[in-house]
Image (cartoon, rainbow, N blue to C red; front, side, top):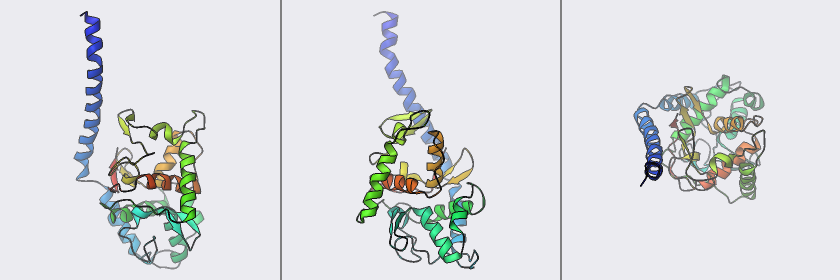
Length: 263
């Protein structure tokens, strides 16, 4: 066997070893940080804000109905987004929180939705998301699809997930439509199917180590649109909620680890 042939035979094995090493390295990095996940601080802050009297009406959010009845937090996160009769629309966690903040506390939901990430009440919403998701940690996702609007929103989310456009002709599926893909050293879960416990939809909201911020699913989707070079979607808009329904239904039975830790 010539030297060239020998190298050609060894190259695939080396490539697999390098890929495994990179994935293992990232897993070890996350494991080292997990014991001191700063998301815990946001959970505590979110719980405090949830019970605190705030807004023009000086009322807490303790009577907010997240889908399991007024004031019930545990188990609500893993069943969102879902249809709410009082708003006659499908809502995810953040859009539902906006409804409660407006109706119970007197905040202007439209004004809050237009606040940049990391500013004002948007920081409060990220803390709420950390607290509420943490109350369902370890539970399995089971988004309802019994209402016609829930099924319609799932189909809208599916179309949005595969829609290609922008200067690079990207879609959500460009990164998350196949198994065993990655970008840089980051594994990319296949979100067209159930990626498993604590992966993809089942890992957000999460604390981003790279920028020291807590990101809700709305924030994460906003960044996905940025990476596709699409215009930013409106906060808690129909398309972002639909994408949440599509990914959430696909994650049925997956265990939530939110709020998780991300690079």
